[in-house]
Image (cartoon, rainbow, N blue to C red; front, side, top):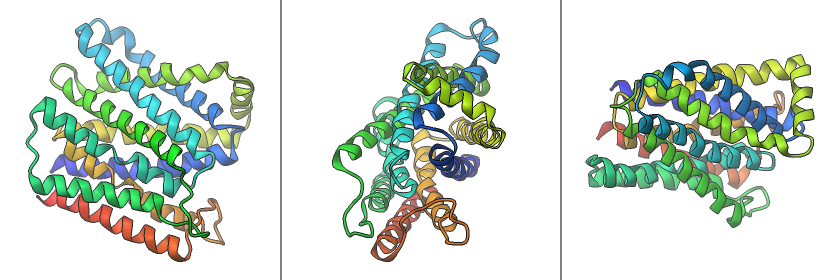
Length: 299
């Protein structure tokens, strides 16, 4: 059950990263694009550190697949971070955590991984709970996530699922750390294009010149995110990718509780709207997510 331990570690660490990303985007940078540029620079530096060694040791096709995995993942990240400027993080994350169902279909169709009826039911329960958390009523009684944004977020989720699938299909052709670094290079290259938007370069320079903000950014993206991604790779190298993806979709549960804690009046780091009916509906959705993930783990 090594894959299960690493999957939960990845989900929990990613939840910490997600909450801190929200704090950075709303309180420490001028726009989400500035944050995305910082992410791109960090990931590119990580990838280039190993790049000369990588291209001399591995076939071209697996190396390109690892790179494409990172580029596709970057699309997911850009969509998520842009939405994070205006959306409660506890609503946003459940929707982009529906990727296990895409991974399951891809794994079943192309990798020949056996998926029984109860596994499919657990996947559906997990995804349904995640969506319920996100689309439950706000304080006004209406869903705050528009259909247009929902479609975009589902597309981002599909991209993340495809990224995980691509990472899995080359595990026999490439060792863990080289794939990790090539994926980082792909994320970095795709994310860095935002430097061409007005004010982004200036905003990033301001981030670097602000010690408190830069330290928080480096700790989140350079240390915590590194650990979360590493845990994910440890998991997929030890188990079936659709199982890993489904267990990792428990991230909304951790984000949900972190959002409540950090939105308490005496902490007030976040401003998540978690009162009355909204809290009740999200709690039910959270329970469904936990039940679905438990079904995956125990079957």
